[in-house]
Length: 299
Image 1: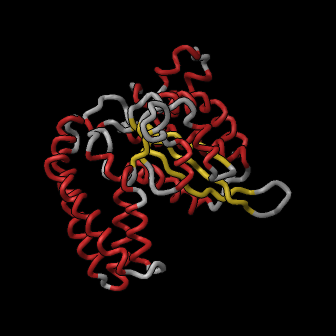
Image 2: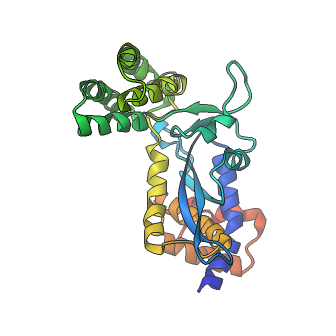
């Protein structure tokens, strides 16, 4: 069975590579990573490897290109991995707070490089945990004000980027300004080692990338899009326990990329996979690879 899956992964890898190229043509990419325990040769135990996930989904700002996700298997969580995966990309990269992505960031005032956009959900999560654990008044006030940001997003989801930017400038900008001022006022009152000070510093040190959604309607308020794409892999990981080898991890990444992309495009993954493998076995030409992609599936 493992040999069969390895063969399937080998045949599908060019499609996964093509999908990543399509993702890099987008104006905005989401990125995230998760662990994938993998057996280490000769060690008799699992090592910690990673699945890096890249998602393109333009539907929230009215884009018509198909949504897609690609996973890449790596031994490392280092920034070198994302730099290699996204080599040549010059658009918006929306991520959590992990510093590995910062090496791609465009220097202030420069035209080359990636524009980083941060995730407000990660900020909110830190304050929510404090609110639940110690009933912090600062955390409660923060969460109450933040709710208005998601209310605005609900009203503009799927609309064009200009409309989204205008709504954010009219409503969300004042909320963000109030929050930042509030945090700056409260931070000096706190112990530097407190969890609340840590949560506030987390937000303030990412101020520019958190504010970026206000002036660009293509950016989302959060990076939940890629987190949703990673969730099925965490469930599969829990059931499978580990990948059997590095080759198995690469096979996992290639197959999961295409099956998850099929689901994002409301395509039956089994039907797509059956048709695609039959076409490849019958000598489908490489120059027509786009016709094999899940978003072009026709029964």
